[in-house]
Length: 235
Image 1 (cartoon, rainbow, N blue to C red):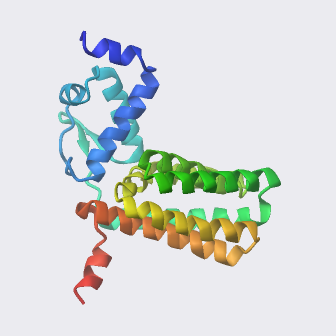
Image 2: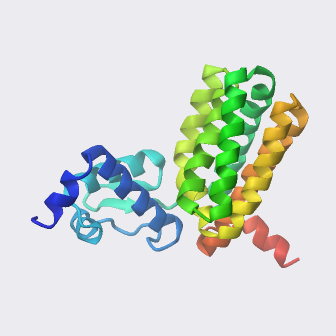
């Protein structure tokens, strides 16, 4: 425990659990933890050089996100999610965020629009420097700003809840550096449409953007490749 204590004392317990949650989620998304794999708290604590407490909290978070299941006599295991289910989740969040963006094009305040432009500029800087972690963080903020810009509390709650479940898959797409450039160009279309109050282009561009993110996930991790994409490839 002597090696673990200094590490945990340097970070808040909640922050450490969030970090472990992201690391386990990345392992699942990248296919390193296959469906039904048992997630042993002791082994994970050793793997990430932490105590069992943040691991236990991380597994609870992952359970809420649907990536982990708790089974009697087996403990926590990787959920048996399929690529088909992932397709449906991305389709749903694509429709949800597109609806939010469409309303945002008409309802965003001047402060909202200024923040959107600033975040888009930050995304450009992160993309040009190849800073994957920074781009991912800015991407998250930009999408949050658009969702909240719809100024409909029901839509916001539904979109944020679904986004939380799918966030690990959206995050890992940027392990493919080329995807950052593609994502930024897609953002450019969305931002310009919102600022122009163009609801039709905004809706279509946001929906296409989320479907592109789904395809990018499959390129990073073949285990999650869309069956529909595989079928079209062999036609």
